[in-house]
Structures are given as structure tokens and as C-alpha cells.
Image 1: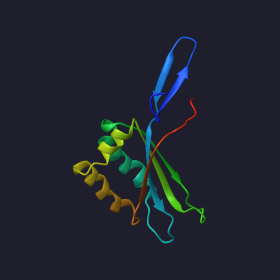
Image 2 (image 1 turned 30 degrees about the vertical axis):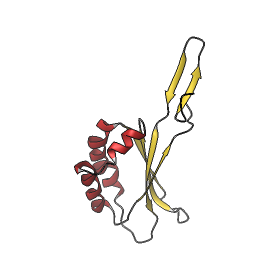
Image 3 (image 1 turned 180 degrees about the vertical axis):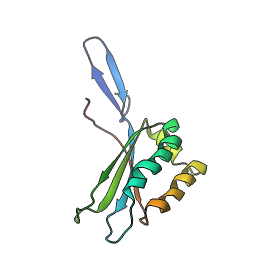
Length: 126
């Protein structure tokens, strides 16, 4: 194995080294009385996300809602899957693109998001 983010697969004919993607997460806290426009977030905001970040290596994203679960620490958890850590670092580099995305936050929520990042170390293959 070449590094912690690469998996080695053996098949009868080929040896495959697969680079594991890198994930970043945006988590909006579950605070009673807060404002969060899910429709705007999942349509208009993510149209901007796709436009700005796909060319930098964003492979996919998914949004999970915990609305109605009063015990959940987060209302919304979004996972961004990047081709690698360098792609995520480029996307989160201060500049006009990041400014545009962050300015958009006030349109759909009054919550300050928490952000996390991590290297995928295992995944199921479909």
C-alpha cells in the first residue's frame, strides 16, 4: 500500500491501487427557533456549489436532515466528497468563490455552521 488513503485490490488479472476520496462536512446546529430554508439550500445554494467546486474536484455531496429529532445535535449535516485532500484545500482557499458561497449562507439560515474534514479510510464498493 502506498499510503493511508490508498487501497490495494487484487483481481485475477490486474493489481489496482485506488485513492480514497477526502470528505468535508458542514453541520448546522439544531437550535429551536432558528431559520433554515431547506428548499433554497438544496436547490439554489447547491447550484452555486456545483458551479464553483466541481471544477476543483468535488465529486459529490449529500444532505441529511434531522428535522424533528429533538435529540440530534445537528439540524442539517452535509457531506462533500472530494477526489483528494488537495482538491478540498483548493476549494476552501480564501478568495472570491469561497466569499460567494459564504455570503450565500445568510440567505437560507441564521445558524453558524460547524465544519469538519477527514480522510476516508474505508468504503463499501457497489
